[in-house]
Amino acid sequence: MNTAPPSDHTGSIFPQDPYNQELVNNVHPPKWSNPTPSGRYNLVIIGAGTAGLVTAAIASALGAKVALIERHLMGGDCLNVGCVPSKGVIRAAKAWTAVREAEQFGLKISGEVKRDFGTAMARMRKLRARISHVDSAHRYTKLGVDVFIGNGRFSSSSTIDVDGTTLQFAKAVICTGARATAPPIPGLAQTSYLTNETIFSLTELPPKLGVIGAGPIGCELAQSFARFGSQVFLVETMHGILPNEDRDAAEIVEQSLLRDGVQLLCCGKDLKIKPDNGTKHLSVDSHGKQYDIPVDEILVGVGRSPNIEELGLEAVGVEFDKTGVKVNNRLQTSNPKIFAAGDICSPFKFTHTADAQAQIVIQNALFPHPFGLGYASTESLVIPWSTYTQPEIAHVGLYQKDAEAKGIPIDTFTYHLSEVDRAILDSEEEGFARVHVKKGTDTILGATIVASHAGDMISEFTLAMKGELGLNIIASTIHPYPTQAEVIKKTANAWRKTTLTEGKKQFLRTLFAWTR
Image 1 (cartoon, rainbow, N blue to C red):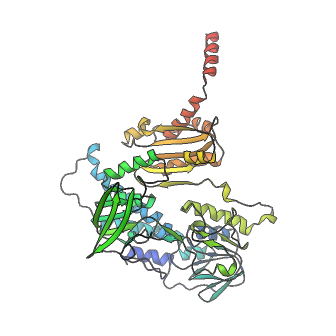
Image 2: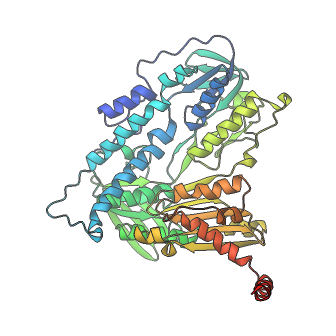
């Protein structure tokens, strides 16, 4: 198989084609010369992933003197090994599936259909390179940010060393993110395996792929590679897939994965990896049956570790543990001059959360309370998320189990896509919208959508929750027909019907009888 080792701190990635060369020239320029610091910075930011980039861009736009340090690739996981490449791969896999299912729409394809995995991956690399200019060192320099490529380490409570150069700061922000790690599976450490940091370097399709972990990463890539034509074995220790989601929502996605050819080995026990003459064997007990499966590649889709090493955190009194840097709701560490944002400190490891946290850091670090603006707090965040399988699952707010654990009485309303005209016409009837409201009110506490474009659709519920708008507003809002987003209004209408009590009905019958 044509795989590559993990990217190193020189910015090299695989394969060395023009697209990846363009990417590296943007996010880790090989001949980059660090600027000469002049005076103290308002902010020095370690880490140029989403949180660091947003913090730097906004702070500089506001007039602050800003330094941004990155030792690896600017853009962080999202651009290089996460959101961007994975969605490029998912889109290509979806196109391959559309050809396979085209006959139901009247398209009969005769003759040989040639599939080229290498071309699909090249497309992803081309688009990633195109997007990378937004996160590039050159662009941020033009924004007025001093960009330093190198290892940043706290040398005192007011200085950071970057490969021998000292930067003085009034405030600092740690945005170093997290990295993929592997669970302690017997034999795994002795076997070469893929993570999200290396799988996008593939140029040849593995005939047999073992995927460990049926969370979002595992499910998205298991389905995509099955659609490309790999024989995929998805191993999960718990029952089913996506264990954090509602069971009926996850079951819809599970059935879709099974139709795409993914073999699910859930409730897995005693997982072991055995190398054998270039082949890897997955040994696992699933539902009481022992499996010994030879595969060409293994993707580990579970495990994240915060990038806290070599930062000198102990020297400046910043508390941390194996989950990351400790912060308060203002994203301030135990050292009041140092803040953190993004995956290094957040339980919600999403790009959009890192973006939102960066804006909180800006207000609290640059405009402290004495300026009269008040503190920004993470407690005000309403965070949605989506898993980009087909169909997608998106969620915001509380699940029913969360409400029960908190002792919050709720009413729940669910409306199925099989009753939505556009979903029927699109042949995308599997899914639903579900909303939880505070019992006896229209106050939205949480919502789940299962649909082809659930990630796009969840924003209506998110906006309503953030703006403290109830289901009555959604029910009275005109939605274009026919769209799958109508399922949101229909769910709100299901709530509105419950407001017409028997007493109200009797009153109206009396009124109408009197006015005849």
